[in-house]
Length: 548
Image 1 (cartoon, one colour):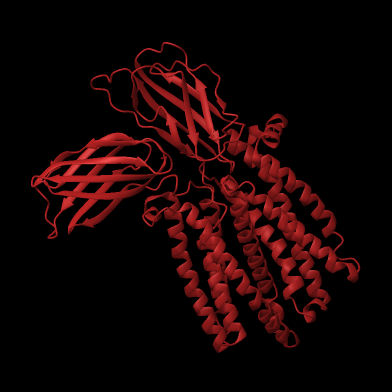
Image 2 (cartoon, rainbow, N blue to C red; image 1 turned 135 degrees about the vertical axis):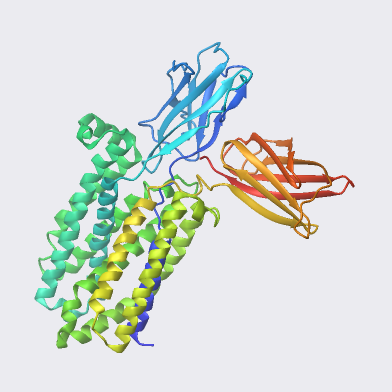
């Protein structure tokens, strides 16, 4: 197998892993537990309300308010983040609240800089006749065109700058570097990448102001608002580091074209600062909110660095295509492919390992790929990848046969699909992950040749509908059931157990509604069936319960 074939295979595999396993997931903060929970009926008014999120929340742009059924505010207006537990938002309530329906209206900014808000209804006193349950609401930030353009511009320009520097120093043959026109062309590409990187980071501050404050662009150009973001948010602190690195990069980059003896040192310094910019990006990702931050941030950073080197190097290959037609440059171009193929193995391994690691943190099960917005976007990207793979195969065959007819069209087609996939990646990183909303739970297990199916809908904190279906080995409903009950146990912490009886709705089908999932996380649901002949069927189901 020749070098060109190996390189083509590596490029296809790396592109697949690069986009199939995106990092920087924006896993918006979601509720793990609230007191009271959705539609909980309390005998008397609590002194304090509390909402616990899955990660620390930003000290700025948060609020928690409680209203009665007439819209009057009944909290003590002392909503605050718990100083000892920055993942908890709480507020005191007024004394002697009368029986009735109440709503907790809350808003927070997660560690990745995305606002999340919602409503949690609850009731004090006996439930009034004819009153319908009010479901909680949770609404996160929906990516707009401004975010997609600016974030995409930052990713591609950073990759262009870092990747082209690496490509120039480690891959580009001396024959190309000695060519003055090629050298000037490369320096121009690097400068263009730096200009767009500067522009994207500059625009990211007012963009973040619109996201966190909820104000339009026309109202965010305020010194006070920018000061609040820069001093009270994780994004603001990271942006200050980015601005300082960027100013230094601009100054050092301007010296690249000077003496040949210092050029390599200057380029390595620029490469190091460019990778530092990538590191600051991980400080505002969901990786920074994990328990083992050193591990998750390192994985996130390595993935971004490998992806940036790969994309920037591909830009270098495409930029030099026109010189491949030069007879004197053709051999150097093939040598360049051979050199990059060695680095390609390392990049593929990094992208594969770190991509799978990051994905497993936020994708709970296969069903979430079709039941959540996050999964649907990812599925769309997979379909586009199949098209890219088809075009890659066409380009591979053309290259093997040395056929140039139609090669440009197929290369542009593959590049266009890649751009679309990168745009989808930006959207994907700004959607709640499947961990926050895994979707309805359904699983079937076989015990003693009998099929037991458990469904939980919507499988989130608050009221759920639990359904159990029983069938014998022939697939027919089991009829001789004396009783059936469920036992709920929280696996992430000790909350005791709760057992409820189920009511028969049809032969072999039983249902019950209730507030038995009181916290997001992993639960064990034990199904106990007792037949009229005093035989028992016992089975456990493990459920990942979401917050929305």
